[in-house]
Length: 234
Image (cartoon, rainbow, N blue to C red; front, side, top):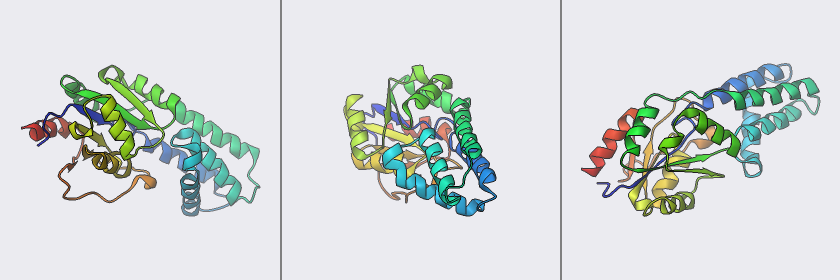
């Protein structure tokens, strides 16, 4: 039972709106540009290595992704990548930053319904300007009581956020598509962790589910959230 649930946190990218889809399209463009030098499988592996290596420097988001593509292009071409290809990669990043928002099914109705009773907090990683842009374009901004754009998601991130915007993590819930970032650290902080899988999830966000944990649930989509909250509070 979720006694006196007061605060509900939502992830943004691939929970409320599409995001990884556009990264995958850009990776396809990247593979085409580098096809004279290496195959797409090897290129993807090298790009993932660069992303993992640089997370502590660049953080999460499109700008860091573009820098990692450029770094990978230099590596796989032994420094021979042309300025034209670099310019194409930068243009691809700008295209991503301009891409319109596509809400996922049930996102607006679910957030609106929960906003009538609970304190809602958007807790998202990524570039500050880009996340602010996406929230503004989503039409959901006015439904959230607070927005937390963070460099990473740890148990302390959730504990602090839920204390700032409510009585604490034990009376809070976090909803997201990343087991590693949205669910596990939220549960470790003492809140509920609700996993809503997305068809496309970045490899660095994968983790094993805490099967059997009393505060863990998995749902098929956002349309099931309102009923879950009601059931937990019965």
